[in-house]
Image (cartoon, rainbow, N blue to C red; front, top):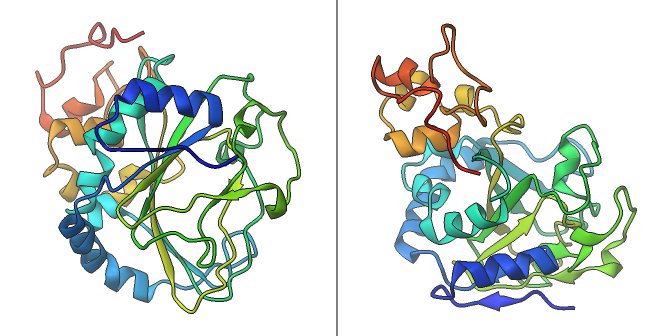
Length: 278
């Protein structure tokens, strides 16, 4: 079954409904091409400097570089892209709030074999969350066109409804092919993996993921974004990267202070009654 594709102006309720059914969906040509180019330019020194992966899962011919909020001002626009967050908010609407989980550019080099098929939520120590209870909504932005030949992400459409800890092969997957500037959204329960790169070009994707705010973040944003950078960010982005309580009281500071007060000072948060989302 192929991945469903949607135009940027499609109602986010429709896209979220498709993700609930299939576990994934693509929004075509959502990115501003100039903004994507600036992000690549800003991250190029870090991508060139990082080593390839240390094991088969990370990819011996694959480079991964994170810290996008601190390292790339342009990447921040993708982290908080309203066209994406409108869908994320619907996929994760069963929880009080959500947060940024990780940021990463993944550059799959020529000759890289296919990645093992997995669920991203296995990062939580392989805990089996209740069926149908989504804890992540993830994105992969195509910085280059994603094709089956160059290692497009492989997905098992509808596998968000299947049992946990399955061992699936790439032969059971479909390539999430998409044009540069498009974005694949998928849940943490979707079985997927990076594809084999049989081309002579590097395939670059920007992986930005979100999780429920009462769970630990995969990328430690408080260290990835140093304090001197954090204080320059606006409140909405600060809260998104984790300077907000998870649910009612998780993550407060000392005398029941909201984390935003540590950055902005007294009076910058409205207190423990301000988180009233479902």
